[in-house]
Amino acid sequence: MLVGVSGSIAVVNLISYLTIFRDRLTREIKVIMTDAAASMLPPSTVALFCDGVFLDKRSSPERRPGHVDLARWCDLFVVLPATANVLGLTAHGVAPNLLTNAVLASPRPVVFCPNMNDVMWRKKVVQRNIELLREEGHVVVEPILASAYEATSGETRRSWVLPDPNQLVDHLREAHSHLRSLDSSAE
Image (cartoon, rainbow, N blue to C red; front, side):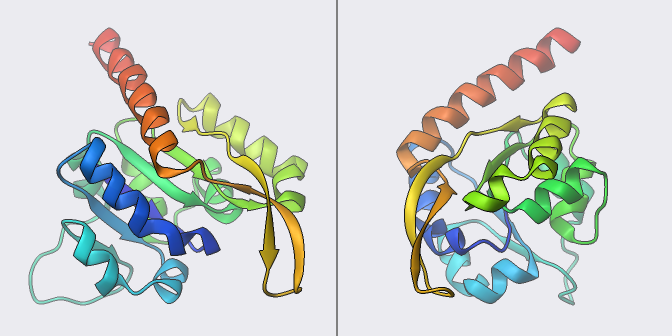
């Protein structure tokens, strides 16, 4: 499983998701983190719960897999959390970082798990981007409406958040089964 992580505040819950994924869904997990995600959650912490963390523009003496290798390696590619920015970039084929390049290089549909505030979620452009992704065959897991405290404003606001890790595993199993059936019917 390949997990793409973008810069949403929901990244603080990533470890819970990786732990449940390994327990209930897959034995091997690799993670691609955007720079924004890596600024919120240290990649060294994430590395304790997966089989590799891949970042933009990090030089390394050993050959590291690139976007094509990572996209071909996985049988399930999930972007969690998926920000409005990542949804928009990938919906329009724009790839300024390793994560969006891997989505474009993926031979299979990708599962997106959006997380954003209510105002952003309801924007027509965000909904159009989601529809574009679905038209391309990608899966977008519906987020759940919740009230959350926003530290920037000091107010409680409505946000669309990720399903809890166990619920998400059920969604991912269903999506993976559906995507496998599409693969086998295309052969």
